[in-house]
Amino acid sequence: MADENSYNSTQTLDEIVFENRNKAYGAYDLRTRYRSMLTKAFIFGTLLFLVVAITPFVAMKIKEMNAKETTEVNANLIDILPEEELIIEQPKEEEPPPPPPPKEPEVQEVIQNVVPEPVKAPKVETPPPPISKQLETTTGVVAVEGVKTPTYSPPPPPPSTGKTATVEVKPQVSETQVYTEVEQLAEFPGGINSFRSKVGNSFDTSVMEGDEGTVKSEITFVVERDGSITDVKASGSNKDFNAEAIRTVKSIKNKWSPAKINGKAVRYRFRLPLTMQFE
Image (cartoon, rainbow, N blue to C red; front, top):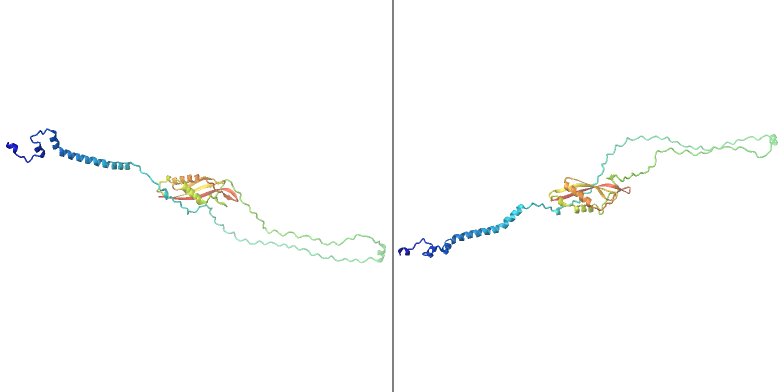
């Protein structure tokens, strides 16, 4: 009995409750492992919550890492510089040759035409025949030879001065030659600024990478006698820019007013500098 009434201070609450009872019953086992199971459940639940909360951010980060880099071109920054003047190739002026040495004036012999002054013929007086001869002759009509007077001849024309009248002969105009100098330039409907505007609006900027900065090129083409455009070329350092510039100029279907020489339409080579800025 002494042992049964003795108090053991090391006993837990569960041992005191289930003292002298069947501890093999499930309730004792549940109460004994309750704290450890509760701790494990809390840790597992916390980890599961963290995994569920972090998973969308990890998936988004992986998607961003695997996404391909895209290149954006800001087409609004294209600026066509209209202040550049149209450059028309002009032939180089040759230096004038040195003046020839002065020539001594030629001495021309002046021939003076002198008209002889008419001189009155002297009157020839013959003495009358004697009376005996007068009685022997018969009167009648007798042909008497008159006195000859000198005839007037006009003077010869003055000597030639060497000056001849010059007639301006206009050069012939070729229908196949491409001219760079004309009397009347080829014109686009609405002027050159209208042509620049059409080129800028039709230019496809997607062919450029977008970080080239300022790109320059010179476009040359032939304005035919009917106003159409042929032989389009572009000379610049950027091949993509040159190819797109050629395509853009060919796509403009408006016809030009052809250049003219002596009022006749001719083929004319036109030069257009083109500058664009990409940032």
